[in-house]
Length: 461
Image 1 (cartoon, helix red, strand yellow):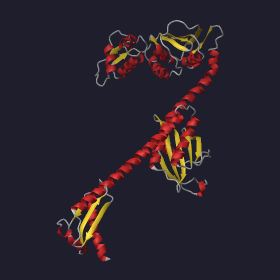
Image 2 (cartoon, helix red, strand yellow):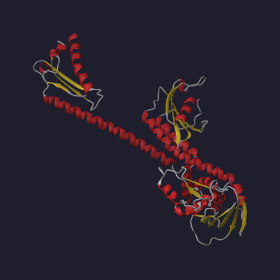
Image 3 (tube, one colour):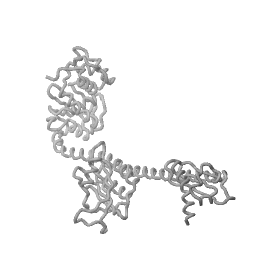
Image 4 (cartoon, helix red, strand yellow):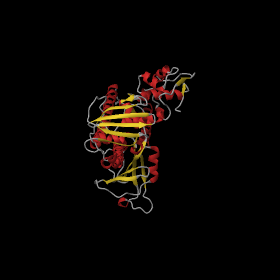
């Protein structure tokens, strides 16, 4: 037994060297090999030849193929060494191909789930249905016993389901875990015990919780909260990554659905008011009202477009006027006198008005068409209206910019172009017209140049 242990120790020293260096070792005759110290073990004299080849192709080496021969007549030749090395290489390639195939299989399954989710909710505008589809898929992937979707800063429940697809009652959620996910916007996997007095599922205490955030454009919508018994279910890293990707994809669809739902509710609130404001008698006529009472001219135009009306909305405010003409529910002309705007730019500027009076004149569709605006959501125009509100609150068309002596380093090409147009006596309106840019962009560049202390002008009196 002592000789066997000593001989094993001698072999292990070579194995250890191969694992540390990653280099194969072969000795045809140990007794005549100057690199081998035979004095370390007397019983090692019984070994004649050794081959040791690392199974991994790179560091760190975790396993080797080892073979030895004893006696004076048996020895491993170079051909034996090359054959074993080739076999190890083939085994290594087979293992790498197997791992690559497994990785590709998981990635393909990952993409299939994402595609399936998109197919299910792509055209879905009901948040409750999106919650249900996403949660059911996450529970299936993770094999969780039950799952929840909690939304908002107070984590209100919006959907729940168990492994059988049936709704379940809420459990005692880990509030510290929920707060951590909200603050970090990253998935958290944790083993936890139920709160004091709570009964654990199947009478077992420990549960594994996976909490994944629903975040879109840094806006926190809520979490997907999955719960399972720690002794029967283990959430794998690949499952966590897939569920996180599904949650982020779902968040995009949820944002669109929530915005649509908010818009629908807001339009419903305005319905009664707009019924009165746009209730023109059959056969023609006119009506009028306050822009402030509408909450914005776009509400009135949406209603007129949805009813397929033809006529003109006139708007008068302090020192400015505008008009929007419709033909069979399509906006065909729009103009604003303040900055002498037409088309979509005029609509955006008119939507920024919060004061003034409007007048609707019903008339048959006729005359020229400068534009054809059929989309009554006005998403781009309303976004630009916020900027027009700031511009009109600070500048007037007759404000006159004056160049100041300051370094021009760091300016963009459009800013340099606008700065070059600033000459004595030229008004903001004239400068915007000369820039051949959209007026809002030109005026934005003027404000940026003022912020950089490159020009100044007289504000609105």
